[in-house]
Image (cartoon, rainbow, N blue to C red):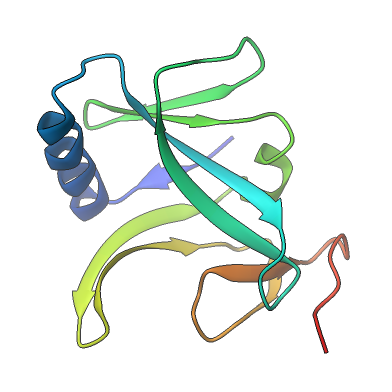
Length: 117
């Protein structure tokens, strides 16, 4: 499985985790139904690591992905971007057949989601 954090994303995550002052926290990335393209990405900090979670560690930062979400997130790149739209984490997903303008939701290429009309 290849989930990649860019150095920008890893440095920002490390800074956010340091602010929380809890060495047990990890970033959890997940996919849920909804959004304007069928599925949406979610991010949260989590202390709990389930047996079925995929664990990715890069640049000293640990990322958790649950067993349901991993099928939609294989091959993603997580970046942290600061531009005219503000600062945000951005997922580049090669498995997405389409995504909406906000970049926070997508339709998987496997046809698992349906875009809202």
